[in-house]
Length: 222
Image 1 (tube, rainbow, N blue to C red):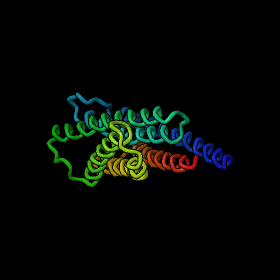
Image 2 (tube, helix red, strand yellow):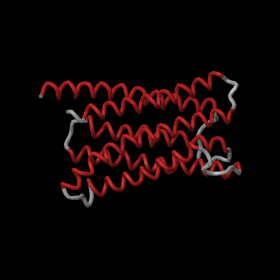
Image 3 (cartoon, rainbow, N blue to C red):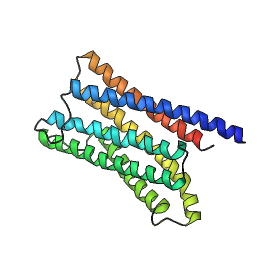
Image 4 (tube, helix red, strand yellow):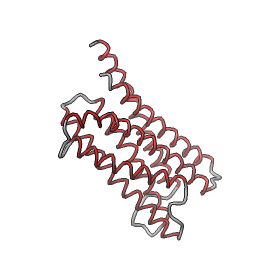
């Protein structure tokens, strides 16, 4: 049994390394896209495009990268339970704050260009994911941190909390990919380099989520 646990721990650790690789690559490519091709990121700018660029940047950093980090920190890092829970909760709280800024940025952009809000499949998925994420965080905090539910209640909630977290990560990735496709279609890109850059960014975002999920799934056997 101990040998099997060691094998699962080693596999989960390796998958975590691969997940970080794809997550960092997606972050770098997104920065290249937004800074080099799209003119930069500035929430308080008078340039509507620079305001919009804050949306994909903060949403990826919060709802995908930090959420993935929070999941891996709890499931794959060897430490005391309270330490892992605290890191897990704090990273999710930071992700929530970044997500709020990202959502505010796209609403501000729509106001600047007089565009309709919440009309696309991307926006529906994104807002639904955000609402469920808030619910997940509140329920998780109250059940597992403070005021902390009774042991039988926590045991019953844990599988739903874990499964819900994994589902929310994929929902956030789905929102990101539909958002990249939507933006690419709106731009009607003639520059094939930028188009390929967007495609690779989306691919690395997806691979990051897959390897986060795999590492978390294997870690349950450790």
